Amino acid sequence: MRLESDCNHDYLLIRNGPRPDSPLMNKYCGTSVPMPILSQSNALWIEFYSDNSNEDQGFVLRLEAVYEGEVVELYL
Image (tube, rainbow, N blue to C red):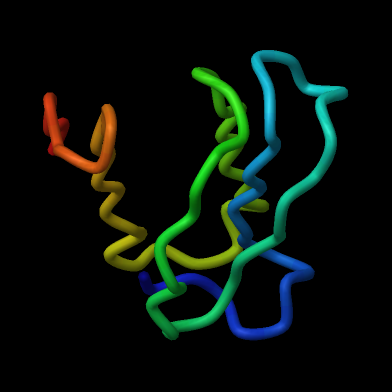
């Protein structure tokens, strides 16, 4: 992940649910790769914000659907 380090310009929000008002799981910025994020349901709200002040590589998102401990689908 390559976003602004201070979370004021570029960031990624992950919410536990299907809507923009679902509970916030975390707000990500900077260059650190976060630990795996596990939802408590079958939906996540993923929101990217950029103020367009800089252009850079952005981020890569990898999604896996897991059933009974086994990866059943992979999205890249």
